[in-house]
Image 1 (cartoon, rainbow, N blue to C red):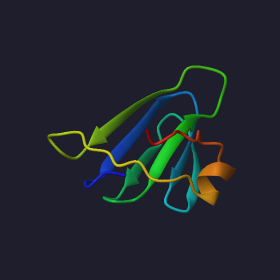
Image 2 (cartoon, rainbow, N blue to C red):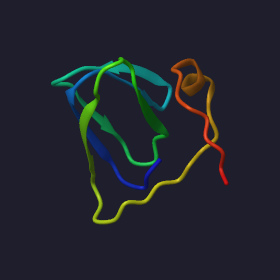
Image 3 (tube, rainbow, N blue to C red):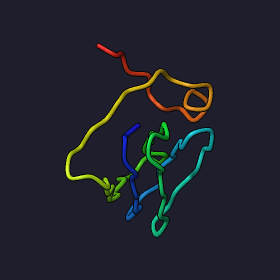
Image 4 (cartoon, rainbow, N blue to C red):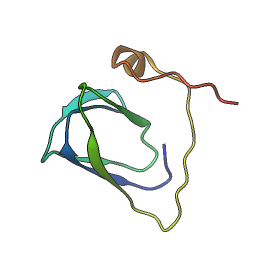
Length: 83
């Protein structure tokens, strides 16, 4: 998550987003809004190229990793180590 909001514009391909407890399939033209401090993530949900524009509403990028959730696992998001 981030301490600030994020806006995502999907331009090409298909992505699968987890925003809090919501799983959302996004396609070209979709706009997703992630409120500050909301755990979120995404994967490329198709075999082709995924192109999206992620706008971080902050002059500096800041990210905090959280443990995977039941929802993120169900959506197929990768589980990364916290090293």
